[in-house]
Image (cartoon, rainbow, N blue to C red):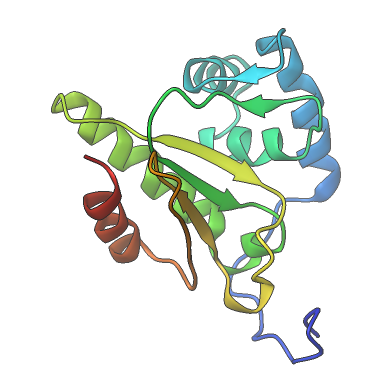
Length: 156
């Protein structure tokens, strides 16, 4: 049952255990001593601990002492709470790959962040978009095609 009292569709993906997310989030503090989580810190953590990069992003959201560094004008925020059951971790994979492609091509980059909830639980996976001009939107029932379209629209 959803927070709105409606039945949710059955999960399509297996979520990471909460204990694992919290544990990884605590371990991640050693790679972000000032509390700022950067893509480089997440990649270093992923490599040194043998953890998938998407899991490192998800875990960072579960540590209240960490915050995502946001040097770019546009950010994509992935719900890594309940939305994991509907493919949120795959959306992190898509964003990571698309950001790498843009950076390799010399195009403007974007930030990737994770949050435990984006308050649209009935429509997961959900990805928020924030732009430099203060614009904000949520992509519901997000998939890779919607992410590609959003990046083309939001990132200059």
